[in-house]
Length: 268
Image (cartoon, rainbow, N blue to C red; front, top):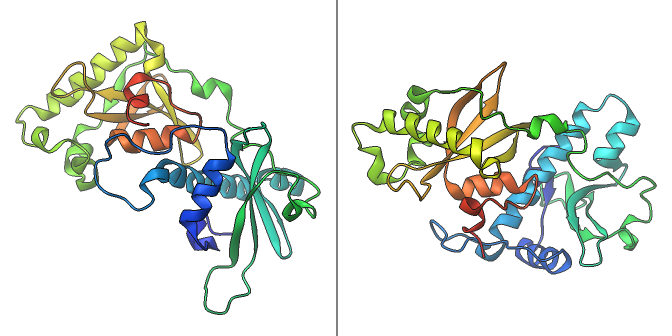
């Protein structure tokens, strides 16, 4: 199965499916308070990114499985249908699953059709003898811990020479002649601050591994401009990528609802 939901499955009436899922799940914010630019499905943009990210994570876990039992626990696939755990709960604290069936429409190229999001009592799931587990159950707990005493090696050259990274830096700051020093100083200040406020460091999932997000201030020392992703190495962290704050929230939400104020204030 393809790792991207919209490549793997034809998704009819996606906007309606997002609204239905948001109504079914425990209430949480699924939109940004002041989005950087207009988007389709703006009211559920975080949920949209979350579901596609969880789908990708579950397919990857299925593909890494070393036994059929382990694979079924990640993504249950049988002849004609498949389902995965969304990681969300209903308002009655029941698990929510995404259900897919083989695509019998000649005019759609995808292998599956996404039929909807349901709890375990729905007739869609009556054929599923083993419901998939919640996502990320194989992530090791120690990976979540951040070591503020470890140094962070920032690949400033890569960040500033890479167009995707550079575009994520607020435009006024891109022309600062001392931007390389500001980036490194911002990361070091965030690391030092984390010694006293560990909760400001937020974990995110990327490529099946845990990284950490640090808020980086370039203009106002009390207002983050972007997030730096840092990867755990042997005795140090590597910083190779920066993200907009909206990207950071969406990535962090794959693991849990972000509660760090610098991300929580972005949503409503």
